[in-house]
Image (cartoon, rainbow, N blue to C red):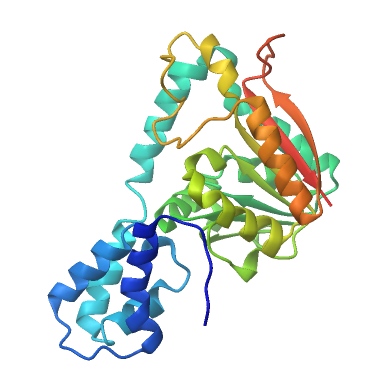
Length: 299
């Protein structure tokens, strides 16, 4: 087997350290508690979101039930810090930076409207978080199938609770489902949809993971349309409460200027047979553009 990928050497070695004995399915030495610690240490950046993490953990720990249960439990705890607390931080940051223009509501409304204009019936919300877009889609009967996807199982549980999915009428419950998945690993469940929305998602990915994200969404899932929003870095100077050297959110790995976003989106569209159009969301400045950039990819 030959694999090829451009990535950090440390990332490659962390995968190989874990996966070589997993692929061989045979460890030739005693496996104890220290192997759990090694597994969690080597896999901390990628294993919690891996779609085959249970298989990997079972094989790495030679199917010793007590060890695998311990490892899987600790991986689940590390999926995400408390989403309620995290969401509170998000809200505080939005209030401090974007309060004056109510940008989040405008983003949701713009994406909802765009999905309707595209005529999408079966829609993915990739990186759905607490489910704010999902709420708009549920209330709109023109959407026949709605799927919320997030890397954190705990975040999905909170979304289900806040959306009160268990209280929906049976015919409504059949329209929506939630499942855990990572946007950097192939997942066949993402294929075959009319459209996918990614609201303020890509800037939370490390730049070196964008290539994997591109393959998962545009090459493997291939929805009929993809709607992506991301901050416009040029606009940041107009936010009085945002220091010039900082991003709008502490978890952002980057924020792009309009030319950077357009260059990335046009390259992605060209590689995967899409066309792309751009729009802005929020009150636009003549020189700096709108605070949020939106790209709409169509096939």
